[in-house]
Length: 446
Image 1 (spheres, rainbow, N blue to C red):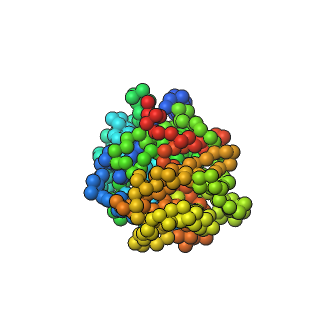
Image 2: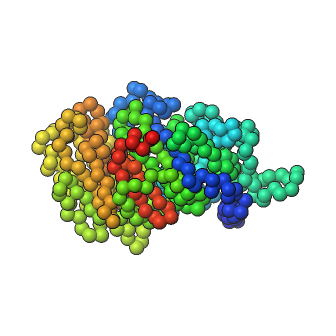
Image 3: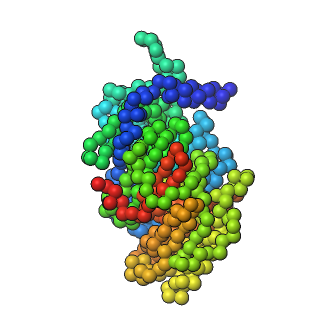
C-alpha cells in the first residue's frame, strides 16, 4: 500500500508540475544559450583537487568507477535496482573516476553548486541545509529558508491562506549503497550566458537532499539528470543540450562546457538514438583502425528483442566497453601494430587491460586513428590520446575494455568519456539525434 501511495504522489507531482509551473519562465530561455563550465575531480578548478594524485591513481579510480557504472547499467536494464520511490537512480556518483561536474546556482540570492551531469538520470537534486552527513560538500550548501524564491512542492497545493504544506518526499539510492533523501521543492536556477551575463530559469522542480549517505567524499553537491524523460531539466529547457569535452588528462584545461536549450551546439554529423531504460542507445555499424575496417559480424551491436546488447553513449563511464568478440579483435589488431615494439605491462587488479611500457606523446605519434562508425555516416574518431591513457610515466594502456570484465548477462557496449574527448556532443531530444563534432572546446567558448 505504501509503495502504491508513493506512486500516486509522484503522479500528482507530475500533474502539478505541468499545471502550475510558470510557462513564461521556460519559454523565456528557449532562445538563449545557457552555459555551464564543466570540470572533473582531476582539474585544478575542482575544490577538492589533489595535486599529489598520480596518473596511476586516477586510472585505478577510473577502472573502479567505470566497472561499477557498467554493472549498474546492467542492473538498470534488468530492473533489479529500484529505489523506494520508484526512481531508477543513475550509477553511483562519486569522486572515483573522472565524473563531469557542472557549475550552476540556485535560489535568490543564488548559491553556486557543483553537480554531476548524468545522461542516464532524469532527476535534478542538490544537498540542502540543514543536512545530515554533508561534511564534505563543496562550497556553501543551499538553504531553502534563506532563498526568497523557494517554495516546497506540496502533496496537495496550498491554495488558501494559512494552509499547511505537506511536502512530497524525495529519495534516491545508488549502486554503492549511497543515498540521498529529503523533499521536492521549486526555485530559480541561474546559468551563465555566452555574453558573460546570466539567465534565470524560474520555478524549477528539484530534490532537496537533507539526508545524505556516502561511504566517502562524494566530490559533488548533487546530480543534474539529462536524459529524455519528461521531468528532466534537459527536456523542460528547449529539449536540446550539448557538452564539449577536451583533454581530461590536462588539469589546467578550462574549456569543457555544457549548453542547455535552443542555443545548444548541434553541429557535425548526426546519428539517430533510441531511449531504453533511460539510456541513449546509438547504432554502431563498425570500427576501423586506420584504413582497416575490422571484420565484425553483422548484428553484433544490435539490441536484441529481449533488451540485451546495444550500444550506449554515456557520461557516467570513463572507460569504454565493447562486447567480447569485438574487444578481442581490437586487442589483437593493436598487439599486431605495436606489440613487437614495446614491452608488455600489467596493471595490478586489471589483468584484462592491454598495457605497454612507453610514452603516448613520444612513442605513439604515428599510431592510426581508431574510429567508431555509427548510422547515417557519423564517426567518433579517437587519436592515441583518447584511445590510450598514460597510467604512469612509463606505462600506457588501451582505454577500451571487454564487457565480460563484469559478470553481467546483457553485455551492452558503452562509449565512455575518454572516447568522447575532443568532441562536442549534441542531443536533439525532439528528433532523437546525437551530433558528433570533432573540435577544440576552446573554439566554442566565445
